[in-house]
Length: 401
Image (cartoon, rainbow, N blue to C red; front, side, top):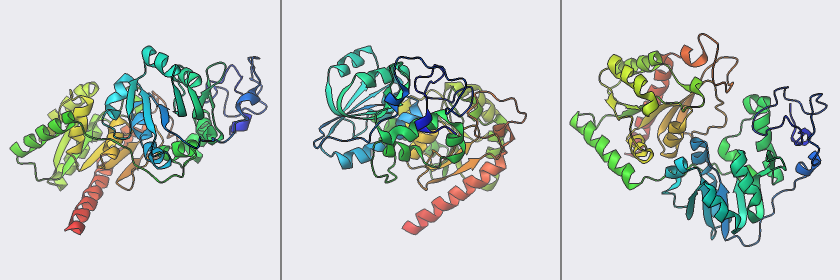
C-alpha cells in the first residue's frame, strides 16, 4: 500500500489523483522515472498548518465535481467557529455557482475563469483552502498570496502535492485504491476538516433555497394538491447518475420493480425526478408505471432544489441529487455499486443500499460483468429500505405531537 512518505512526486508516472498503472507501491518501484527538476523530498517535508493570529480574509478553491462542491460546504461551519470575523471568497466552476449562490457563509462567489484568476493572483488573503487537484485550479492555488495555505499544492510539474501535513492523508487516498476502497472509513466532511486541522464536529452541508427554488416548490405542491396527493407521504425517485460514471445508474427494471412494490404497499405519492439525460429512461418508467408524478426533466438547478424539498424520502444513486437530498435534510435511500459509500455521511437521516459484489467499489466507467452490480439489484431490496424510512419518518412525526 502506498505511504505518503514513499510517494515519488518527481516521477513521470505520478498524476496525483489516481493510482499508478503499475500498482500501489512506490517504495522500490522499478518503473520510477524521475524528471530530475527537483528532489521528491521537497514535497514530503511539509509541516502542520500555522494560522495567523488574526484572520479576516479566506479564499476557498473548489470547482468540481458538483456534488463535491456541495459537500465541501460542510467546512464552512468550522471556518465560522475558528475565524468568526473572516470574509470568505469562494472560486468555483460556473456550473456549480447555483449550489453556493444563496449561501449565507460566503461573502464573495467568483466563477473560475481567466478573468477571476487574474484578479485573485493580485490579491492577498490570510488563509487559502484549496481542495482541487485539477491542473488549472491547482496552478491558481500556487499563485495565490496567502499567509497560511491548506490543501493541495502544485509541484513544479503542476501535479498535486500538499501545502500542509494534515492534507497528506487526503492526497494518498487519491493514489491508493486499497486505502480508498477498503481501509478508509472517514467521510468526506471529516477528511476536509482534518485537512484544515479543525476538530471534526460532523457539520452538515449548507444549501439554502432561492426564490426560484421556492417558486418551483409551490408549483409541485399545487400539482400534488390537484391530484389529491398533497397529504400523502412523498417518495422522490432520482434516476440520474451523472455523466462520468454511468455504472452508477440503476436500471429501468429496477426502478419499475421499486415503484410497483411501493404502490402495492403504501399510499405514497411517488415523484419522478431526473435531468435531460434521463428523458428516455423516465419516459419508459412512466409508460410502465402509471400513477407516478413527473416533476419534469428541464428544471434548473435552483428549481431542482425546490422539487427535492417537496419530498420526504428520496431514492438516489451516488450523484449530485443525493447530495442535494442530504443537504435539504431528506431521508435519503442511497444506492452504491461502483463507488464507495464510506465517504458519504447521511447524518443519521437515511440508509445506504450497498451492492454485495466482491469487486465493488471499482470506480469503473464501464463494466464487462453480466449482471453487473447495479443490474443485479432488485426493486424489492430497495423497497424494504424505503418502507423503513417511511416508518421512521412517521415515528418522528408522532413523537413531536
